[in-house]
Amino acid sequence: MHRPRIAITLGDPRGIGPEVTRAALADPELADAAEWVLVGPRALLRAGTADVPAGAWAAEDGAAAAGRVAGEAIRRATEMALAGQVDALVTAPIEKNAFRAGGWHYPGHTEMLGELAGAADVGMMMAAERTAVGGPLRVVLATTHLALRDVPAALTPELLVRQAALTDAGLRRLWGIASPRIALCAVNPHASDGGLFGDEEARVVEPALRRLARAGVNASGPVPADTVFTRAARGEFDAVVAPYHDVGMAAFKTAAFGAGVNVTLGLPFPRTSPDHGTALDIAGRGIADPSSMREAMRLALRLAERFDRPAAAD
Image (cartoon, rainbow, N blue to C red; front, top):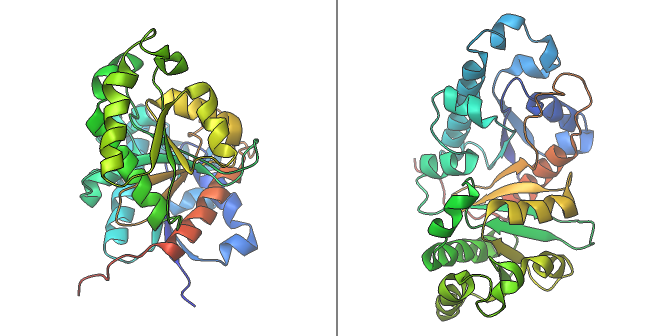
């Protein structure tokens, strides 16, 4: 039986990425399930972040140095995945200001991975196989790292169609769901109540639903945000496409914090990440919860086993 080979990038070296990785790998069952390839400053796994020599990251430009290292690890791990040297990629958190200061001009992992992999479209899915409601919850963010004031202009029928199609393909290819059921979350309260509270439902969501139906994608909506996530977790939908970051993330993290995993759709390899940030304020204190990193590693294992990728070129 093939033993997966999975790369783990250690994220911002000042954050909790190295220590939650170390804690997750202390689980013998998880550690033995794959060959885990660590990409980043390996010294960070031999000691808590607070024990790293002060000169490494504490200088005036320490944040930029940390961001540069974090981005280089992502770049290298992506090269390995594209070359078929690893079967999947798990990424520990980055700190976006440091990332940009380090010379990486991407809003986050999703956009960087998409460009490096040459993917035509990528999607950001938050996935939890168990939630406070009971069943699994998978939420795709149609728009990701945008200010709320910029969302209405960015939200178009074309964008919803692309993201719902990515969701459909990802559920089939990664989760093995033969006939995915997707809900398009409404933008306005009560799905605008027939136009009383905005027109995005009629102007954006409904045209997208018509196009998706013609393409053979089973999408429903617009479903009001105050019910759609509970309905999905109870089994009515396999995934929800949320119109903007916080409407999806607030619901998801309330239902599944610690059990959630970030999955990038549309890449030629599986990629997962824990659902938390760098937590710079507690790094090195030995109190970071590794639960989400363990879940990210477990899901990467499952997705790598299902993922049907073309053979690497000679």
